[in-house]
Amino acid sequence: MQSTPGPYRNRGTGDVFFVGAAGGYGTGAYEQLPHPYVVISRQNAWFRHFNPEGGYPHLVNDGGRVVVLGAKFGEWHGPYVENVNGGETELLGVLFNTIGRRREQADRCEHRPARSWIINDGGRVSAVAVDDQQEAFTPHPFAVRQFASGVESSLRY
Image 1 (cartoon, rainbow, N blue to C red):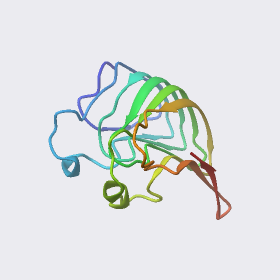
Image 2: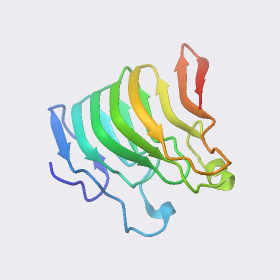
Image 3: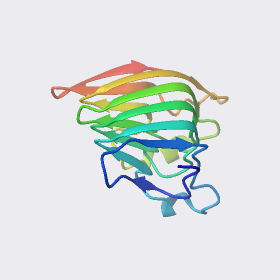
Image 4: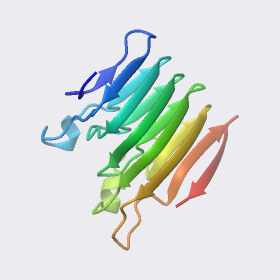
């Protein structure tokens, strides 16, 4: 599938491939974007050159297998990726673009928990990523928050 013009929710369980997948840009106010933006539920999905520019989280893997090769996640507050219900997510060559964001934007986040890049709740995540942070304020003190058997652990930024 070339370039997603808007949000994606799978309706089947077959394999899906996204190349040059971008969306959400130019849509106006942040509040008008769908939350979450892309949801993969019990499906295998591959993304190459992924730039969702949509609501938060940008990507939810709900029990599927997701591989992202080259992506830019960011703007506003995060979380950018949420992995739940036994999902397996690999992020390779990812830029977390958190430049220019403000604490009040991060604190407005209605998703749990705000101010982290990645949430892992009952699955596996691996990532090779960088952050484009150029301000003294770091809106994401936690790179990853993980929940296992009701216990939270965090990898600090």
